[in-house]
Image 1 (cartoon, one colour):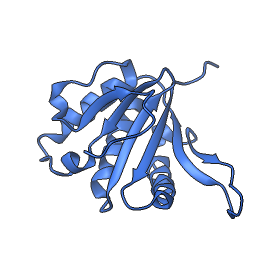
Image 2 (cartoon, one colour):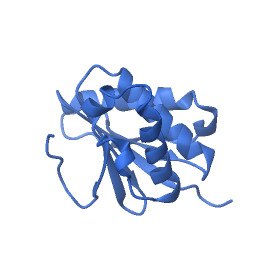
Image 3 (cartoon, rainbow, N blue to C red):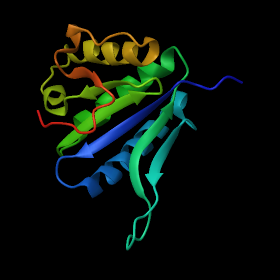
Image 4 (cartoon, rainbow, N blue to C red):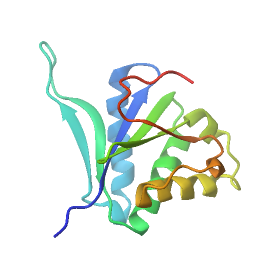
Length: 153
């Protein structure tokens, strides 16, 4: 059985890094409700450091089959983000080092009519590796996966 393409979803909290792990767990449960993603979402943890009680959640790993699952992942991540009230930064990185960042503040400002274009752009990026198009209304930006930090927008 061939291995499914895999994406890492990195959540960075604008308040405290510890909260990013809570948000990652929340998103994991959200994605687990999607039939197409069940069994393909796992937490990525780093070992505990000296004096720490347990592992820290760094990100989520999501494996998706080409086709409808990428669109489901895109819609689910974007709808989860729109419901969050905290300040977040979201990155999605592919196994081939492509990376896209979701501007949460702009996403929240979209109208219902504008949202499908962003879902389609992210789904296409996930499914086909296509560039993020201007129709994403500045919500999605591709970035160099070799960057080591994210500058606030």
